[in-house]
Image 1 (cartoon, rainbow, N blue to C red):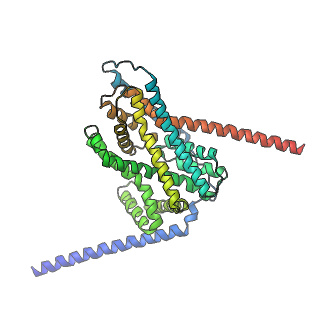
Image 2 (image 1 turned 90 degrees about the horizontal axis):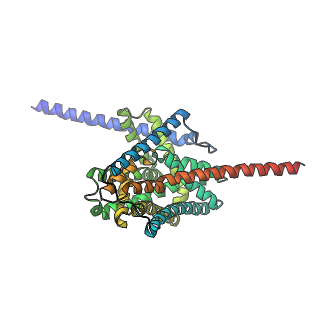
Image 3 (image 1 turned 30 degrees about the horizontal axis):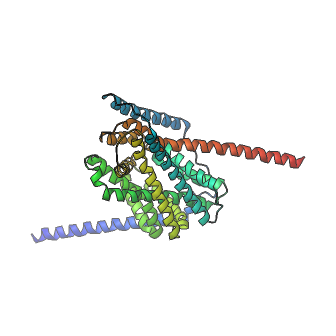
Length: 406
């Protein structure tokens, strides 16, 4: 018995020592990686900001085709479900309906107005030229690229390129879009916290438990990148360990290839984001203004379903529609399609049709037009305006040169 007890004690001590050795090895490896990141951080940061490169044309075209088919399929099935029932009474548009329609359009104007104001405030704070045109174009084009790229990943890179190509220096050109993204994410999280605390009575019996859980997970997902940026600024080595932990789990599951390379790239990006954000976040008054504007614009975005449903004769209270939209937006944030397409339309229709509201299909189309397709349309118009302006400026410069030579 004594020998068995001694063997077990030795075995436990050996396992404990092995675990300690593995931890020491990982710590040493993390420290080595961190030093490499600090020494060679400039290797992956170009001196000049380049225009984001397009992917393979065939891949891009295939993605567009799938995107259109997905939207068409969701709209078809929701329409079939809506009109396969007893024919709804014809919707009579009167002055009240039109007022609600203008209310939805006003929400869109407030969203773009607040986002534009954020950039103008940051331009002034950073000592750069304050331009309404460039602030509005940055906001509109950023939202346009968010809408056409999976997970909304294209907005910030293009905003950085746009600002730099229009005369803004590298630091501010990077800091402004990242700060805009950072505060917009937290603005929605603040709305989520409000909805989760005060809106449970509204969603009980309307949203399935699975949708509520997905919404909670989506809200957590919104905080991951901003929180990691904050941790990187405060305790970079802790951020390094967190990144390394999750990347190595991904490597064990064969999801991540070249884990050390992935860790280094992730930490470099986080360091870059953190350094750029310090230009904005060190001024607490400025940060408060940006967060306040972000909460207002997210509030306007989540108010759109109320106006869409009421435009088509639905009878729903503002608070209820707002809370339901916050849950919907949070839940669909985990869907990686451009603009959360497919999931957004489907979940909106499921939730609001379950309330027995009339005209739900048309309300869904109006809501998506306000909160999604309008940004694509505005982005295309801004693109066209900028292209025409650039051509006109080149012709004017060429004419002046010709006159100077003659």
